[in-house]
Image 1 (cartoon, rainbow, N blue to C red):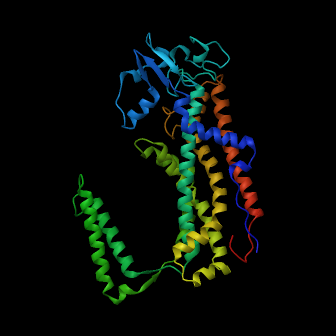
Image 2: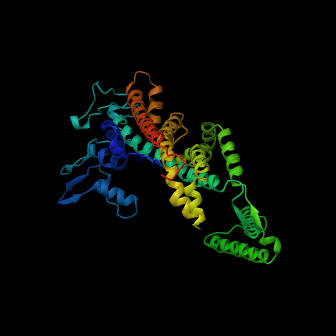
Length: 411
């Protein structure tokens, strides 16, 4: 019996890959402390202030607003002493009117000291390019990871169920199916307001409890009938393949571009949701194929004969065998999600042109061709992130293929 070699952790990869991924994660978590127009620690009129932390606490609803939080670094009053300042004294949206109209990184800039220099230049409004890159890295991280988590959860869940139960192993009582359909139908009637007025305030909870009670009563009545006690075979695998085929037939990028304008305000999580919805079929197909491969192996038959519940078989025996290809596809998915988010932002359909991302920086550069720094630096950032994700995926895929087990036992 051969065993599958586990996919190595990030420390087993070249140092430059670890540096890129570590810096990307660090920037995503600590960017307000790296680039900000407020001081980290300040002293004024005998009092100590922590503007960045206090501003975060106010936004989170855990602190009290203070007028001192309004003081930017380049407009500090006399006696205001900055004890610890950020590495870059600008936020992504900070406007420096004296250095607007596309200031080059190597050209003259109107700054009071080298600390306030725009090391990667500015855009037309005077926004710092380096600060925009850092804040764009945070958006790229959360969009990429959010889309990856959603696609992995959906792909794992649906792929495991479709591969394990196939078309003939999932049997559900007709009473359960009937009561569920009645519950959903009553919910649709309530939502559309055909017969029941749409509730306001907390009455939606009461309505939900009434609908749940109606479903339970219908289930109890159907259980009394011989028809309701019969088992209904659910062709789960056939439904899964139909759903995957439907998703793959849609042009994902075009559909996302069509749906995004329907949102009143596009946020990071809504964008990650849309991107992840069109990524999960690929993961689901891999998971289904792996489960179909191992479901009739001796070790799977043995645990079924021992009487283990299906959820334990899926969790303890099926999932460890399908996890490696999921990790490989997740690595590729993060890079793809970052590329899609950048493309949407470049077209003005992502988080909006008012939100500084790598895509919006590229969009600003196309309006003024001499501003090469608005194209080169975001382009290099996108290339590095996508390239590193693809390298990780390739390495994990090579290790997975080298350690694929034979058909005589589990991993």
